[in-house]
Image 1 (cartoon, one colour):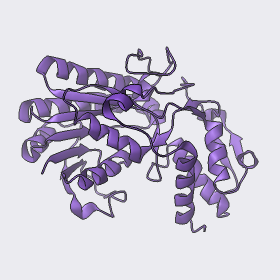
Image 2 (cartoon, one colour):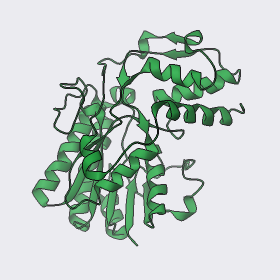
Image 3 (tube, helix red, strand yellow):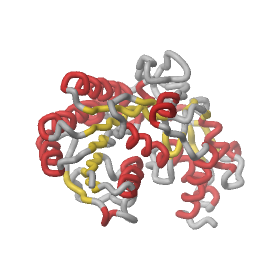
Length: 320
């Protein structure tokens, strides 16, 4: 039985990855931060199959102990301060956790379990002000937020540890991936929850920012399989994981409201304060390498994804 250590296991990706790893027969150990309030709602339906330990990306000792005691075969670093707008309000914390935190995990692996395989959750936000379209593994980075800049550091430190210490380290440059487990602060879940509340008569309008931003949206449950596939290869490589299709925020609104038989333009109002200081206009990935070398394909379409999210939120609000 292989052992997987997952940081950020309580998040959207962590929960889907943990489920997938259990289905592959892994022993799954999740690292969580010490908190007076447990937030394990994404894990509730299978939490008894997991082992949870305490650790923090800002504390090297806790990471050393985790890797030394767990002795993982595979390490998936999904923990981060991952909300882009928050990175503008907390740029130092974002750099400390999302950037330097990766160095600490790599150090813990190098010192305690160098034979393990390491996955780093890189992000399409690293491309920022894109220099070519679509974006692929060789596209230069041009981040437009503290979050994107921290992810660029994390990506390159992973490359450095791979090349300097001959460790099996790779990064998945994942484009936007959503699900009914997405946090409410992210635009896709903000929209799906608002649609459900409007349908339930609990809300009369939805406030949005830039509707012209384009993103490559896929299903998180599909994307975690690509993470695992990367660590099963003979040699470590970095991969773009994306659908290859871009949609605007306006398209997202249209699909989400249509799933509830509503028209979005009757309920949406624009608030300029919600527009980013430095906007990322268009992101669309080229998944050719992942498709050719990993055999990975996205299964859930954009419209199906939004319908799943809206229907899950309507059920939560008691709408049939």
